[in-house]
Image (cartoon, rainbow, N blue to C red; front, side, top):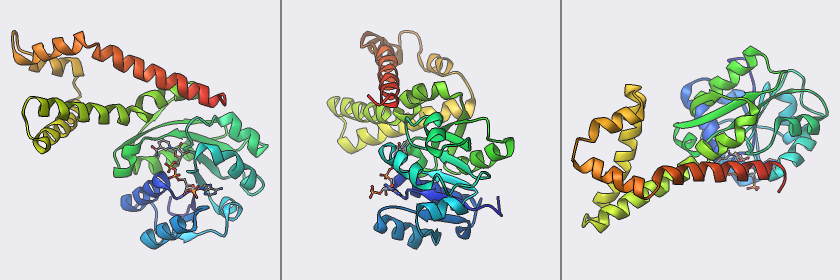
Length: 271
Ligand SMILES: NC(=O)c1ccc[n+]([C@@H]2O[C@H](COP(=O)([O-])OP(=O)(O)OC[C@H]3O[C@@H](n4cnc5c(N)ncnc54)[C@H](OP(=O)(O)O)[C@@H]3O)[C@@H](O)[C@H]2O)c1
């Protein structure tokens, strides 16, 4: 990785998180990162903060990058691809994090079979705790994939999927943080309703969610088993679980993931 140039088009929240993660992990040095953004203020801020290098424009960046991250909004991806199509070298690995943009659309915009990786990250990447689902076209070599996975692991976990799963990934981990923000907020409100001060309820709610996730990850145990361990016969937790079942909590989550998956597929069809 020490000899590679990593290009970053788009220095918004995701682009900034990626650059910060790469540098914090020590994977690359600031001199290896080449950036460009249409917004001069965001570009200047990223360069000032991380001492990375500034490209002249998108085509200049595209021609110099070994791994090229496209971190612009899906609506502007086509315009950027058109701008850089003549400049990207065949050795370059093009990594798109744009939600809902299929690999085939990128290939067709580039007019040739380049090395393309499609990624669906999520917002906890902003604190280095994201999870990114990754799929590659056939031009991507094992070594290319290793490099891209390393770069993504600087902002969290990675999981490999086939491209047909990307809409479901969007419905689960892409949109999932929002479901959990609602859960945390609702738990806090519920605590307030039972007479807890707002700040106490909010801390109890967020640390309970974080602790439960940590317990699943650290023990490697099935969440159902961990749930059974705290649900003693005739106790408080089983009463709470009964109320959740009556409120169709699980069904609501199935429906949320299904609705977001369907919406992601519709957006991919341009609807
Ligand atoms: N944030 C998330 O939760 C999340 C999760 C999963 C995937 N993603 C994907 O990540 C990508 C980036 O999202 P984001 O939230 O980081 O967006 P963002 O904050 O809006 O950043 C995108 C940046 O790209 C710039 N830009 C626009 N047109 C450009 C062009 N032609 N050339 C170079 N730069 C250009 C934008 O400038 P202007 O502001 O001037 O337009 C903006 O600074 C999106 O495709 C999104 O689907 C995001």
